[in-house]
Length: 227
Length: 227
Image 1 (tube, chains in turn brown, yellow):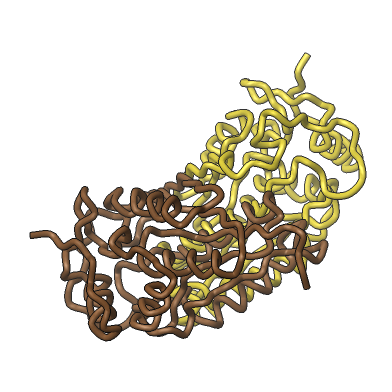
Image 2 (cartoon, rainbow over the protein chains, first blue to last red):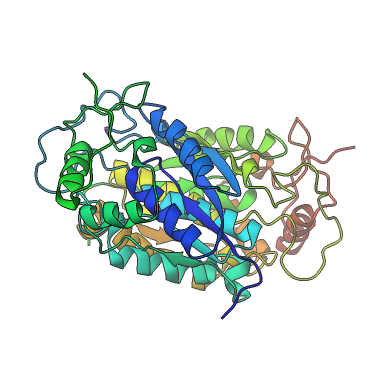
């Protein structure tokens, strides 16, 4: 069914996955409104990256919502007293931010309602997902059901679709997809502990997944690493 | 089933409903951790009220999460360019904040996970609910289903219960309940446009519902009104 409004909200972290997601939303013909969160990350590099990516891909608007997740605590990504792990490991890692995707999707839902957007794009991935519970299909399905009843738009029958085009892709598939769409991955920052210039550590779980993805995809890795 | 941890997260707005909810959580034997949001409200009085209520009722901790909902726009409660209605009206009112309860419950879910809390209390009410979609039983049920799959605790089978003890109570019933539990309603602020001292306008939808509730309950109204 055609929707009069071709707006979509795209959650943009500044990383590789969400940059690819944005390109897919643009390819689908949407006017995209990107949304990033300043949630007490250890470094600002990913917020700068999100802004550059939004601009490079022609987003209609870019917003940064300030959100003080540090007051909740419990994650190495926002609590500087906890160390970022560098050696993989079993189970749900300490870099997990409690309820992060639930919170981010909820705020995207609010923005989608204000814009009367047709879709929300989120780059969750259940393949290379590092054990985060809120990256699984069961989570996405539950959020879809919630979105249908949570807002004025949902109740009126024109709530946004929750689009997760990367859900079952490998990191290499994602890189292949984005490369074909002209995504400039040198603008993206995936590292959990990037420096002020956005250069990656090359050692954290996120860096290791990313590097292996470029290798497997056979695409030159444009990541800028710390010396 | 008994849960080792008797912690509960209580969403506290500073209003009459959530103050009653807090009293019910305390009565149920929980150690309560209250959570309020600084989301760009027109006035600070409700945040001050939330803090006083948490203290008066012996909360184990009180947190205020800063959350910039103003950047989303679309509500008279956060957008000062929109007027607050004073004459009721049909449908979903302009004071509706897009996806507010979804966002607030999501953040409560994150805190509940960090605390390994057994329950989240939210004072939503489907009787005097002013037409907000995220105050209906269908919304609460959908959020319960989401909570069961969204977090580490949920996946491990000890996610928090979502408690909505006010869901089907009238405003008068709520006031009766709280009065029996010793809730000091003079500390609470329900008005959409309270002044700096927390005094109510007496004219907005929220004031009218509250005043009628005290009348119907036959409880003296301790609300401080503007001159």
